[in-house]
Image (tube, rainbow, N blue to C red; front, side, top):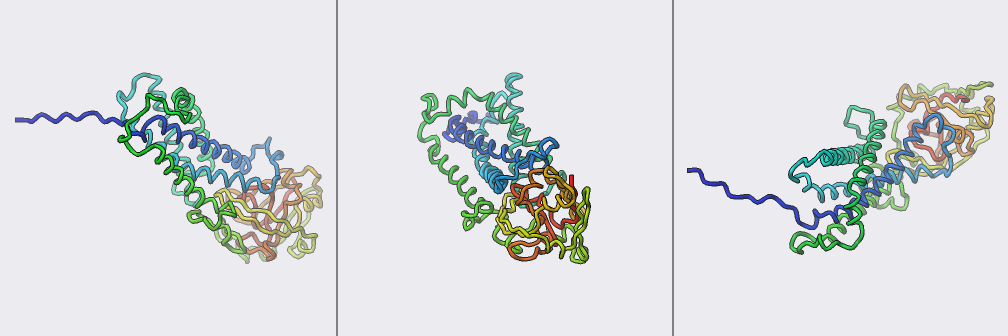
Length: 380
């Protein structure tokens, strides 16, 4: 005889941690973090890959600008990781809502939420791995990360628009009476939010030291310590990776091409008026560090080659291959007196890993565009 199966009541999620008010409290901070991350990421992308109409309009000042914006980009993205996990944990019971699809608008809403969650997880996970320079995927990181960022922000705007009535109802600190729940239903909401805040603060403080010098002693989990490295600076791309050797730089000459082209040996460059500037190297992975650079102003070299006061420059590296082997210096960068063809770093001749015999250093510019092992300058 078959025994009747016991009746199992449907699962309900009535604990405080799964209510709309908690989700809204976390969501508004998560939305702010994502907005900051998107805006600074957009700026970073335009600085690295400026469209033609923007190339000569990108500002070279403030000289520390990219250090701040890229530091904010990585810090806000890192802080968004625990916020997104807490948000998903708070709202995941809605995945079990029945019926699965109630109407066409409801189906579109669920699809938009799926896109939002997938894009958010993708952006934060790939961005976090990028800070470690680990790319375990077959696609190019920069264009895909940039494209999915637009998808994410579009899905976020659509989600906020659809959910705005609920967000408005739960945005203030006053809890509507209809949402009052028994104290025994779960941990107190305030304790949960304090725990999430502590997690976000801990993640931010223990990783932001890679770009905020004052927090350097607390940089426990940052992928890079800017204070440690050859000649006082870390190295992202080594000479070995670029296939540049001491032998390949023997007899090096700088070619400056323009209406009046010329070449210079290293000794001739050293004999020219030398300028000393203090500028940060700020890398897309989030770390940054200031250093003292000595070299020849790029605008002086361009002027000698026949370039006018509005000329741009194309920089060609000795490295055999690489996405940034050839870079462009827009007019404001090329003509800025802080932009140098640097020969010395922190009082010492450049090491091979830092770009010997000469490299570009310019203000408010991503580190990946501070071209090393320069072999050619062209007036553009």
